[in-house]
Each structure stands twice: as structure tokens, then as C-alpha cells.
Image 1 (cartoon, helix red, strand yellow):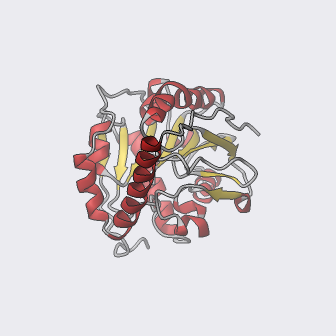
Image 2 (image 1 turned 60 degrees about the vertical axis):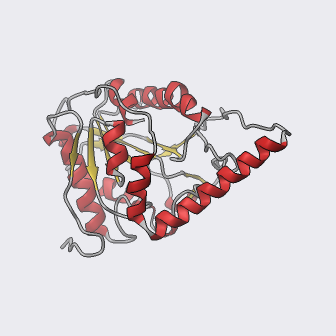
Length: 83
Length: 192
């Protein structure tokens, strides 16, 4: 999906919760979180957490220069403080 | 409302062996969902042993201008759709390669999730967990991004068997074309 859109001429970035699959599929840009399935932006109603994850991911559109880069902010599930 | 009416073929063979295989496949899928829910680290192991469509080379389109000037689109594979739209097909163990389109300024109470291959209880209570509609609007209002495209696109991420071909050759390129038409200058994707 992501590769198809990128190949059509639009830059893309996606969150991934499965690094091994991402390494195989090779999307152009990704941000990996070791979060449970179904929680790419974190927890319900955690606005700061969701915002930080979204913003970090979007920034990757500007900062990633090497195709296939996977960003790893390392936010630990339910431990990292997003204040 | 643009709804993709195309439906991938669903096996309707009366063959007993086929039915049995499908039942086992459905059972296996539901067991995997429960196992991965409680033991997430097993999912990584499973992924290592499972073959996915391996990417050859990496397509690349550089961002043409700063983020603050870009019109951003969102695509999710979380199985989100309008309550008024047909749900994704949960009966086919190979999943469903179709997609749903809905307005980016949608009333969130009009949305629902059809996807039994992940635990979406958190996303049911707050859609921003899988599709950060509110967060993206806030970033637009603050000028961090330029704008948001008018339409969001949603797939159901469990796609396997013959439906992979449909996704790769039909529905994914179709969404890519729609994104070009929508004037998307960058796309943010969320998985489950």
C-alpha cells in the first residue's frame, strides 16, 4: 500500500508495530513502536501521547533522507511520559 | 460518498474439504489474534517465520516542500468505515481487499470498525488511537502542517491469499490515484 502510493509520486510515512514485517516489506519511511496491536498512536484519550507520535512520524517526511529508514523513538508502552 | 463497491470473489464451493480448510483457517486466525493480544512478543516471532510480499528496491519520492505547507492525507488499515457503509468481509479467512472512503471532517460518532484480527476496544472508544483525526486537525490549526485532504481511505489490514493480488493490482493503485486527485502532498499511514 505505502510503496504503491510512494511509487505513484506522493511521499509517504507509516507507523509500524511489527519491525520484522516492515524490514521485509521495505516501505520508504516508517516509525516503529513496540506497542500492542491496535494502538499505533498509543492509548485512548492520551492527547499528548497521540500528538507526539503523530508529529514525530510526520517529521520523518522531512528528516529521513535514506529510503527504507525506520525511526525508533523507543517510547516504552505505558511507561514513557509524554508531558 | 465514494464507496468502493467492488468485492473480491468469495469462495462459495460446496466442496467439504474446502469448507473444512476454510474453517481451520478462520479458527487459526482467531486463535492467533488472541495469542498475539496477550503475548505481543510472539507476533515478532510469527512474523519472522511468515513470508510477506518482499519489497524489491524501495520507491522514493522526496517531500517537495516543508511540512507546514503540505496537504496531508491519511490512510489506515484499521478497518474503519462509516456505519452507513458496508462492513468489511469478516467471513473470508483471506480477508477483504476493498476500501472505504469518507470525509476527513467526519463526525466521529458516524464511524465504526469492522476488523476481528486485532483488539480495537481502545480505538472503539477513541478513534484517534488508530486514525488520529483530531490530532491532525490540531496540527493543521497550529500551522504545523498546511492542510488535510478532504477524504480519508481505510482498508482492513488482514489481506491474504488471492486478495493480495487484488490489493496490489487493483485497490491500492486505485487509492493512489484518488490521493493524487485529492491533491495529497504527503500521506500518513497507520497499521494495526
